[in-house]
Length: 299
Image 1 (tube, rainbow, N blue to C red):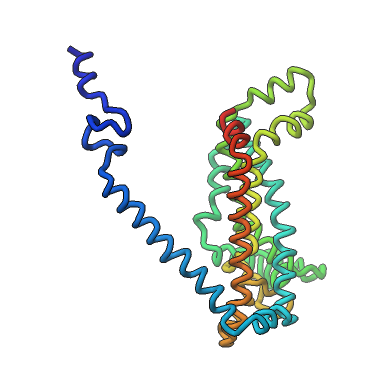
Image 2 (image 1 turned 30 degrees about the horizontal axis):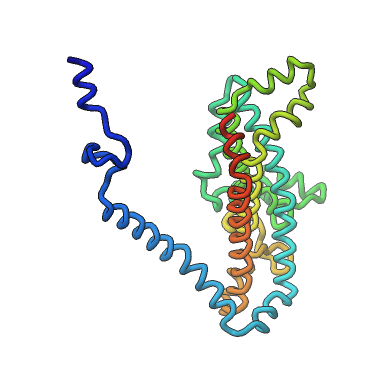
């Protein structure tokens, strides 16, 4: 009787017309088309149209005005500062992300849950609040601000403060890409390498890193995109010093507030283009090395 009951309750195969009406794989064709249409409409309204609007407005005055927006010394300073901050913050987060993921995935220790919570903290804390925290710590009236001032060290309203704020808001990206993959792979490969006489460093370089290289690359791409586009935390710690501490997002805000819409949309289009390039590189790697990615994830 039990076998007969289970047989009657066993769902049909996907696409089987005899399958249960409530199966998620046997919905009517009209429902599937409606879901696809809603998804495409949502993407068009909230993603494609805004991006098109940015590029259209940036080129509305012609190519000469578009190019002139980048000839402005303040714009060039903002671009240079943005690239400099990303060039510092991403490698720092690369080191932290690998170390944190290695610790979480490969070891058991007291406080592991707390470490995972701290890694996720920037996802739940407003970037503006994060910037205020750095002001309270490193500002002139902050906890260690007077000591820094006495030794001629300036953190806030300077490059170090911008880097610190950027590192804070971007450090989960690499770690969060690596942790699930490292946990799924376990420690078998590393233990085998150590048994064969490999040192810890050699095991890390020849076994661990190759196994997670694609997740690591994705994390770096996402971290870099967020670092160049960060606004909230950087706006608080930068001081908005034009030509000195303004990154590209802050420069866009200044131009927009000054009703220089052509320049604002021109710089914004550069940021959008960087984001699209990041997405294109990620998609290309997924397509080109799909087999390698799947085999690495299945280890």
